[in-house]
Image (cartoon, rainbow, N blue to C red; front, side):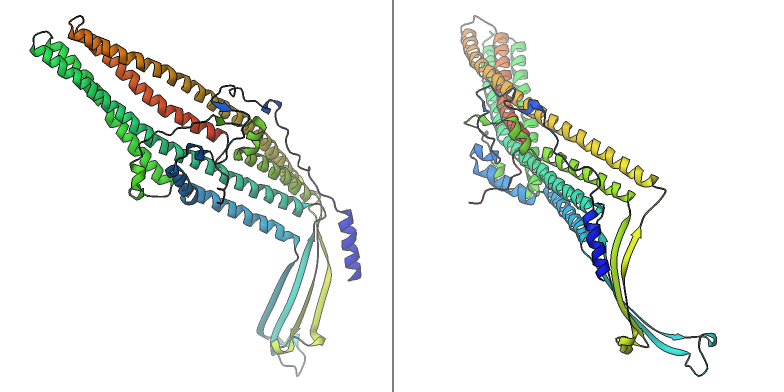
Length: 470
């Protein structure tokens, strides 16, 4: 026994861990602040991005929907199950550090041949065996430690992947809720334009009755009214689709949505610059970057697992047991047996399979590194695109707002000129068609502004953090 302990100590002192040690990959120098599109007053590069960004809209209904989605969404439930599976695998890998013990017992009735027994000896007898054995793998070359390291990376990556899903669910919930309000506004605008054009239809009809307008004028005016009216049903369908999307995201059936959700009609509004922080904080916050980094760590550890197969595997163990004629006789001292020692296993000289696995592990690590770099670049690209889209849409909205005022003035002037007989009905129809197009475009731009805000918040990586406890 003392020799065994001495040998174990010597092996532990001589142990070395195979494979490369993990080094965190270097970030690109261009990830330093500020973002290219952060010079606009619409965003703030000095204020840290808010993890629970939807609260900036100060809408309790939206807050409640997102809280429901984080609890009941099925995609998050799948990701959570994957996290538990990865953690179970980590526990399994850690168990290899512990001794493995087994207990076995057999019993039976035997009959021996005459050649196996002497004269006067009973050829039939009961027989029983009871034993206990224990073994321990000496992690001489780090196979166990590297396996644990790889499993730890997989578990952390699965946790980050769940956060990726949370980001998506939060953003899509906010987008569907925003669509409810913006589509309701666009429907109101379309209906208001229908009412406005219908007034012109009636005016043209009166002029036709008075003989100062033609049948072509009334037909054109009615066609414009019907054209605007035709824009309403598609908007209603889109709003219904947003309701169904909200139901799915929050783990409900469409009929189970609260009535206040269906009645939502206000456009989300943000009364402060969007806090975007800087590039370094972005990469620390985005869970997809964290997931890619942890998968790289896991793949690097697997190189060590594969490399350890080139070297001997050594296990130490022992066993104790007893045999006798029946279970009542197996505990006697005269029948006790024991064993202690070690086992060395080494696949040699053909190690081609092990070297092939090492090459595969190195290729996996190289792919994981490329994936990490691509994820960083994608994070920066998505943020810059979202910043640009938000800024440009605000500019477009302002231009449409100015155009709307001019278009409304033009309709008023043309209508007055028509009463005075200075222009024909075609001029009024053109003016009203232009105003209707501008009104519809402005309402769509209002919706697009909110959508680009949500895209920007999603690109900034917020939405996966656990809500603060009040």
